Image (cartoon, rainbow, N blue to C red; front, top):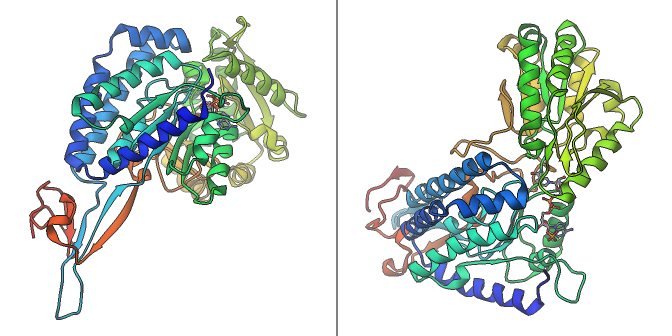
Length: 494
Ligand code: NAP
């Protein structure tokens, strides 16, 4: 379905009007709104799960879990907003003797935010996902471009939010949602057009590097450039060290394979590469990995496009020089199903061929055998930015290789000491983002309440009349939020 340009212009116009309203909402009002959205989504029943299952092939249990996560996300972000955490209110009182003015600063929403739904999380990273919750929490109207892979699911989620907008009597433009790839009668994508639209002030995106980078470039070329927070995935390398491999090669193989094939490998934190130094531990790991991969049943991928990308990209990597197949599911599956596969290469081969370090979205991995830790370090050094890096290690292993550990701190947003990177917890301390190309802004996370920070901007009021200040900055602190007053954290009124 395509969209006429005037419809998109109208959506942006309404969002701009709603921004004037949103700017005047307090953190407590937005908290209540977000809590109601959580309740509204929670109230969606079997129809939501069945529709999402039909559109994405994701299993019911996974979808029920993702719905719970999405509801929890709205509640957690609402709490953080209500506490005034992202208002970051700060007051320096007047001091005539020292010649200092009364200056008060807080954050306000950046303006209308364009959100792209992601294919692989129809709830948690889509219409009612983390980007939408973050932007509303920040005080921004949201325009959602639904992912074409699950339009009916998106509509159900959009209706749940619109219902709350109506109950609260907020302007319609606070939340808009549309489906449509291209502008009617043109080959311009709706997402590109809106990213370039002067009324849009920020973009939230999760998906491919190709699309994320295209949107980032459009935003930077505008006469008024805007931020694009694109999370574009990565290969999430696992570095296994000698002691860890010797102690638990078999368990590590099972853990690695279940993470690699979880959700048919369709997670941005999928651990696409496993590297270790050649030896007895690595030999045992390879045998156990093969045993774990071979009996796996291929499963249906999210959509035809993603299946075709998977087939094409895994073939491309397989065809590179010096590449062998380590393991593949025996069952070939049928058209549309992702068949798990793991390649084997030497460190020298992957170091000499950048194609082998590209993400293959699906149940696919590469095991890299290094001759020594010098090669492991070289591999760490040539990595592009990653969402995660995992160290399968003992503490002694880490102490023995500080150069590799230090190098990985520069490469990834989240470092794991054992465990596997899939399963991104929605908590305050989560960092889901990383150096480019994992994301387009290294400073922010797209998961956890701190995701709200992406959509606020600070504003200072100097010697401003008390009654015209936002509630967040009034002397009496009517919202009872924590503020920095003359350098001290305090909830007390002035
Ligand atoms: P995608 O191609 O990145 O599409 C995501 C959104 O961006 C869609 O709404 C799409 O809308 C829009 N879009 C695509 N290309 C664009 C362009 N050149 N300019 C402007 N907007 C554009 O993601 P996908 O459809 O979910 O999957 C395709 C591939 O992306 C996968 O095979 C996988 O490799 C990768 N992927 C990665 C992650 C991750 O988390 N790392 C997640 C999902 C997908 P329209 O097509 O309607 O314009």
